[in-house]
Length: 381
Image 1 (spheres, rainbow, N blue to C red):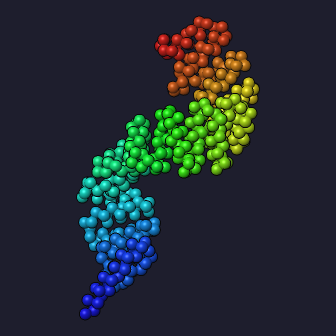
Image 2 (cartoon, rainbow, N blue to C red):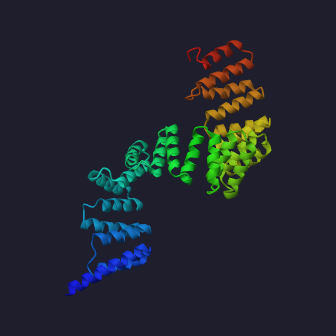
Image 3 (cartoon, helix red, strand yellow):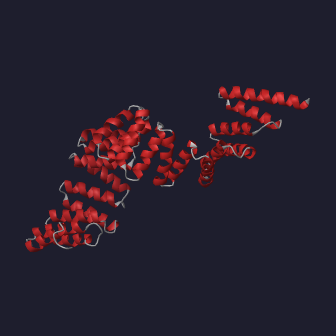
């Protein structure tokens, strides 16, 4: 008699839990589940419900325990294995998570969620080729899943297949035309392909709904590449209104000021950046470049030398310094700096051309011709 009463009460509690779940009252669902546990009436389904509720609340430690209890009752349920893996992943135990996903796929190779999760884990591990293989399987099972297409595109970007990435993003956008993530990724991929006008058109629609520094900066960069410096400056300034101390944005804004001919504003920004980062040789190189644009060659030379010392012979700075010295007709000193490039990998042709130009200034025509020939591969180096 007692057993029948318990069964009736348990059935009622399950119905009440189902109603609470439909109303999204998670706390009440858990209360009913606790009552079932206390009555000894909790089975795999109840533990699964408990795990699902905790997962919705991002309480993954409790979710993992509940999914494990469900799995102990029924070890053949793929869903329990997968969600235990998901809980492990959320808790930072990616090795256990991957093992559980593999177990699911060993038993059911077309379990979409496990394939997708494996792809994402491989992506995190910087293994785009293997990740791509899993996402391609996902696509076969669900060809119209925009998130899968987005992840395929991200893998293609990592493997250098930029055009292919753009095609997959275009396909994803045809499925979810207003998705901000897809549109942002499409715009950024257009930038990689130097399709700046198209990138601007897409990213400006994103900014209508998602006002974010990275997007503003990217649009500013595109306008800069399109030589619309006024618009470029406008967007970089908007980005700085959100993050006034963002060094990358400030650096880009200074570069655009310099390109637009406003060297004074560029100089002001670079000076401030260098005062904050006196050992950043790339900033010193940029500061020197602005001084050089302003024909303040001695100031430029000083900053190039500082950058060259701090960088321990950066070839780009050495080349810029040699050009600055030649503008001051300091050809012998320029020759000494050019020699820094001789043994630097990938710089031999530049070394030969710079040497040839310097010899030409000095009137050493035979040496100039010899090194021009070497620079253009007409003579064996």
